[in-house]
Length: 389
Image 1 (cartoon, rainbow, N blue to C red):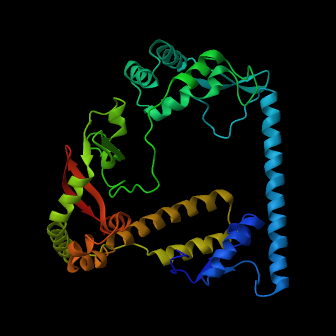
Image 2: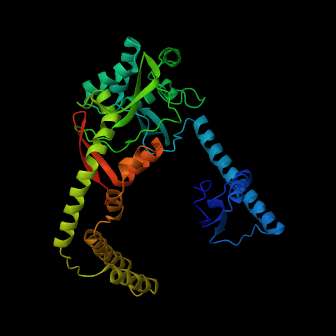
Image 3: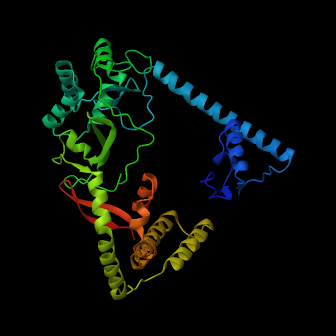
């Protein structure tokens, strides 16, 4: 946006919310100055117009960077100490699949979870037998009625923790697989990956849903041996690829694009007519109290509580009641607000078909996203459009 000349000034709360270190500051500042973009911290007073001002900015950034580094070092030291003592040392609250947290001699440790232990054991046994993570994931999903996708199972297969070793600490937890077997899995089990090109643009990514499970269809591509330079984009359900969804089709991007160019004008015109008719017929609902009055009640209640003229229990009860009414009032206002059809009307009036052929793929995607929220599909064919309003 800055390089495109669309920004004149950047406003943020504090300096450390925008720049994280001195090197980053100078790198970004060079870009800003080259495009005549200024910045301002609303809660701090800085000036880069003088040498003293620039010196102050450098000092404050150096102090902030040092504090962040020291905090990071303290946290890292604490976690390393916990790992050496084989204590629980995870950032997340949910332990790895197949394990649970249990206090042993007053210390929290990872132990095998009796409920999921058979699943993980079968998973690694199946890998040993067939040398395939995908087959093992399909087997466990079917046998135990799970819906874990392939990516999640692959993460389990390639996590060293399941050997009992965690970040260099051996016997950190009970093992499901030996180190030798795990090394063999990493070296010999080659996953088929498609290299993601930075130039590849999918026009309708995130705009199509699986007609069976409702998940967003994921973008993919394929080539043919006769010409590997030509890529054919499409969209498929990842759940269908691992056997937890019945939808196996791939929706062609070219078919979707052709459908939209042929039908978007007619469907948009019908949508606008229906939206305007609904707007005229809609009657405004009565709201007991509007948002402004409820916010004022909440403010007064806070004043009364701070003054000590109301008990904690009574305050909590009355605030909860006011907030409940406030949410209902906000939702009522939102429901009564007419949809903004301005962009859709402008699009319909424009000669978008002639303009479209001159656009690059990035601009084409931006155009479709500006007016379309979702594209409905029937089998592998597009069949309807949900417009943004």
